[in-house]
Length: 295
Image (cartoon, rainbow, N blue to C red; front, side, top):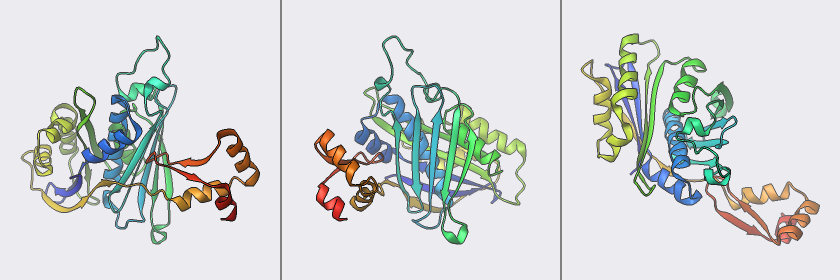
């Protein structure tokens, strides 16, 4: 089962969130028929977005991320998660073969596929009691998703953070494990730079998050490894995570209605049908012209 686990670390001087997203990434891969690299990209993005959403209190609140690359084969990686733990995501394109020409160099990493540069946009859709939704943008550090999220948190939200995310694939490209981990200093607490640096080093050099998840390690074991021998840690809460899209037939109907009758007739004449396909869940619904006009 996919789950988000929230911990205190270093005797309440830091917090840690661990997201297991294996089933979510499998479902996204299946729905969009992703290739290995786009599976890794969206898996990392969904995992990191679930971590960003770990402090949300209500289902109507959400975090939406867009990793937009420049001059790479992978144009965008999009992910969203709400306060109920409902996650979704997709990539543009879903398969790199769709945009690579014969003789093109095949990217070997997500950062390379995004072109190594671009923009990260984070939208926090909060309740009106908290000021409503707001957007923040920052340059991609390297396109490797977790490092970009860490930079966003440190620079835009000014919260020193360490982030890791990983997706482990089987030789046939199927998803064996996926997840992410976030460690942040708690406001007003004293966390030495050396302590945060030690966590970052463990994440970068020896964590192997997806390998640990694939091997069956628990979130407790991962947090214990990250903290080492300094201070105590404890579980604060858990939240189930699952793939769930927020699209609906009514929302699709409204999108069609906004086009106007003349444009709808042109589409019907050109394609022989009126259909809307959700970018997130890849489900398509057909409509009759009469019902759209009546609506």
